[in-house]
Length: 149
Image (tube, rainbow, N blue to C red; front, side, top):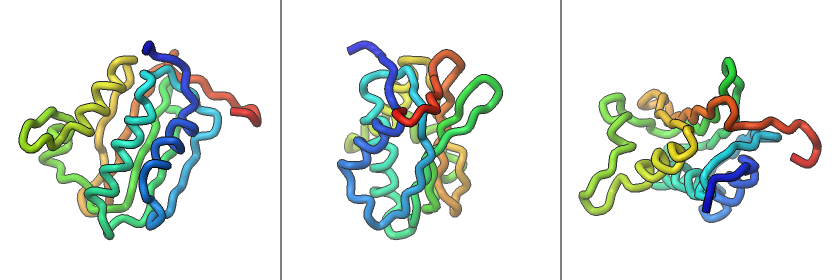
């Protein structure tokens, strides 16, 4: 299916509904954000949250998802307070790896976002948590401040 305008909050909530995140405090500020993205956006958020479940284990206490306008772009932040990702592997976590089918989740995330010109980077600090920054360029987002967004 072709890319379409999607409500980020709705896609995120649907995605995490498939995971047990009851052990995490969730903080979300996504009201009104719609992005032009591939229909697999929900699976993007699912894979990001799944990484917290798999790698954060009992070291993670919260998941925070929010956005900020920076110049003419939007940065969507997906962050936690878990063990974080070592600097030496920040870029390789998005690579397709063949050993035991590991690494497909974040590879998939980057590929799906890239279809519509959206990029993702990991900018967290090891020992303080993971922080994914999703860059949504001008023209690929809309902010609707109405009650029904």
